Amino acid sequence: MRIANISGFYGDRPRAAAEMLEGPDPIDVITGDYLAELTMLILWKARSKDPRAGYAATFLRQLEAVLGTCLARGIKIVTNAGGLNPQGLAARIVEVASAAGLSPRIGVVDGDDVRHHFDREVVTANAYLGGWGIAECLAGGADVVITGRVTDAALVVGPAAWWHNWRRDEWDSLAGAVVAGHLIECGPQVTGGNYSFIDELPDNRAPGFPIAEIAADGSAVITKQPGSGGLVSVGTVTAQLLYEIDTPLYANPDAVARFDTIALHAAGPDRVLVEGVRGNPAPTTLKVALNSIGGWRNSMTLVLTGLDIQAKANLATAMLTETLGGFDQFADHSIELIRSDHADSPGNTTAMAQLRVTVKDPDRAKVGRRFSNAVTELMLASYAGRSPPPRRQRPSNTGSTDPPTSRPGSSSTARSCPTVRSGSSPIPAARSRSCPRHPTSRRSSSIDFRGARRSAVR
Image (tube, rainbow, N blue to C red; front, side, top):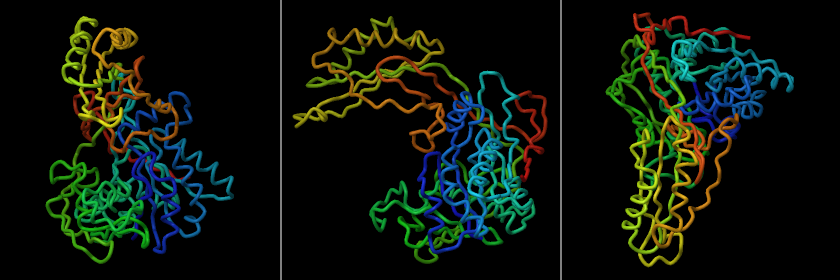
């Protein structure tokens, strides 16, 4: 079977789905990954303003362009774009499809939201589910499957298990699908995107999105549509294979893939065979990602010009420390001297360095105007050559249902709405826990996830 990826993060190429279907090679299933840990916080902000929100809205725009074609060709669509509100996204798909005169059967996988098991400061708590809920929806006749938080690889494991009618204990086959899912989950990263060896790429076009051809034994060929940009080679596949990997035992809810058994072979132009994967039984725990509001952060940037940059930075730091009464009062702080200056620079841009001072604290008043004003007061009282910080474009409202401007994989500890020069912003704090599928005496771990893989077909 041939499973294609058309999204690696919330904000990926809007035309990826259409481009995939315009290619000459057939596709059986289209998958899209939209959820990073930070994305869950952004979706929570959106839903806090509108209870109908909480899903990746960009998926709807992609779907409108391809839904009719997918239904006509029998191509299944599987995505985790449901985020915090998979039922809400399913309802919107019904509306969009009805307006186009279409009637897809929609399956929904939920049960990942376990926030009720945690304290109030936790705003999102989602278990990473596996692929069997997806497989059940497809077996029930769903044309489109919407999930909440599942593992990235589950978007491939579920369709592969359904297509090949695998048993739940076929660990090697399932592990092979986990590896294939991991390889295509980040979209064009496996076809030359973010690849270190730029000289190997055939041209400067944006890489095409990947396709995994998965056999009944779990082996797979990673490829892309002929004529699309980028490159599929043992090098690009290896780079993605090692992305976000810790130990050789890659645990997923459906199987533990042994990365020390993987063999890669070139199998033709833009084709790499992935075989030999061995799997261990699925773990008894699931990871839970938590987001909570972790306090307030404010950053101020001082521009340093001319000579003696380090001495000027030391002077500014000492004077600011005195003005504030010390930095020990804050829960955390950082002072970074960013050297972008050059001797005898031909222009202002390369004659400047930046001293970035950041403070963080649960008390908004500490890091708000009081801190900003302390920096501003030194404008005429510190080092020679002081200039205002460069103007930055204010980030878009993170409460919007549109995607964030941050890079995929951004840490959830990044501030949710950074301010420039004054004011402060709430900081999400993210952490992960392993929660057993079977109850224990610990309150935060007494979650039976055996019933979490619920599915429904509309």
